[in-house]
Image 1 (tube, rainbow, N blue to C red):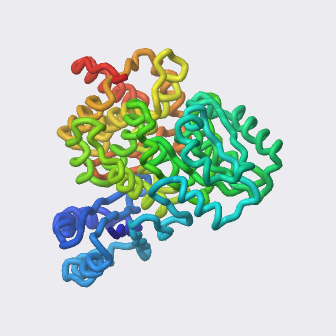
Image 2: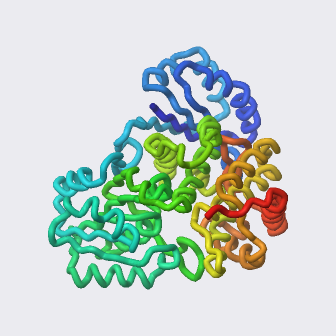
Image 3: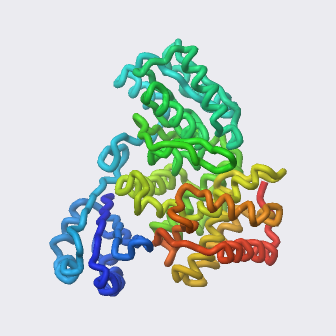
Amino acid sequence: MITRIVWMQFRPEAVNAFLALFHERAPRIRSFPGCHHLALWRDRAQPHVMCTYSLWESEAALEAYRHAELFRDTWAQTKPLFAARPRAWSFDTVWPTEASLDYPIYFGQAAPQLEQLLGQHAPSSVAVLVDTHTALYCYPHIRSVLPADHLLIRIPAGETHKQLDTCQYIWSQMLQAQLDRQALLINLGGGVIGDMGGFCAHCWKRGIRFVQVPTTLLAQVDASTGGKLGVDFMDVKNIIGAFGDPLAVVIDTTFLRTLPPAQLRSGFAEVVKHALIADAEHWQQLIQLPTLDAADWTQIVPHSLAIKRQIVAADPYERGLRKALNFGHTIGHAIESAALHTTESLLHGEAIAIGMICESWLSAKKAGLPDDELQAITHFLLRIFGCYPLNNLPIADLLALMANDKKNEGQGVNFSLLPHIGAVEINHTATPEEIQDSLAYYMETCRQQDTAKPH
């Protein structure tokens, strides 16, 4: 498969002309031989800036389109509308690949991949960061390929430990082991381990190499890729952090067999998000799953991760297009943080599922999401994730957490919203009243369905 991303800046007065042309031509382009998908991203803060994303069977299919009359005629009509020369990227989605980012992602058994990486890069010493779960269930699968004198750093499991105090403990272990700048840290675990371990490696002696080995579905399709590192601080998620690329990412889907159902469900929320913002056809496939037990993760994980990887490659520092990945996260992060102080805390994906329902409601109000698509998203997510009693979370606390979200610019709370399934618009804002109404929509729908959260 070949992914084609084109970034375009139009003359402000030409935007409507392009949108009309795109909506007229898109069905014909999607039906062109070898085209699997076509979507448009639009920056609401800069409505003259847009980006198209298309997926092609092969380079030959993309080349055939470039020489077709449909392309030549579309280009002739579009060219006079540009304010600057468009930029384009093509990514080969065969794995592993280094075409789109500066590090490879390997799929397969973790042990032989790590053995190859250690032989290739010859670190001065090796440390492995695990939590209490991955120490028991995952570490034994890679221990045999590690140096005999490797350092094992074990921390408690869970989001509540994603704090600077835990970083201090990790750094103290590194200091006692005298890890130098040629050392390598292997982060073996879920999103907490990857985010925090990468942050610790990024800061240690101004940066040592690290490898992400994600063991949860959430980490495999989302947290392990993209270079975002960090920890929570004063109840605000990931507010302290940095961008830093791993040496490599090693994804072994057999680790998913060690997960309890709730953890698998949590990761599935990010799979759904990727489909909603970028691939309507994949969304249709996902909603046909009777249960998550029927999912083929060897197919779903690479497909979902490819969507994130391509977006990140086009916008690694979240200045524009990458904000598309925040759908569901503005409200979801606030709910996740607030729930930590209750007796019914939520996993990340469980909170993001609520956020996606609420932000789909905002999408219908502010971005034109059709009502039938809002209902389809709502009912599918409730079927998978059930309901959570939001009345336990004071609305003032949720709004305060959203106001501190790192994605905000200026005084507004920033959202990425859906004009329809398979497309996304970034840099929407919503008033506190609209946000409260979206939460009320979630609670009322739950009341009508009376669907308890699965356990």
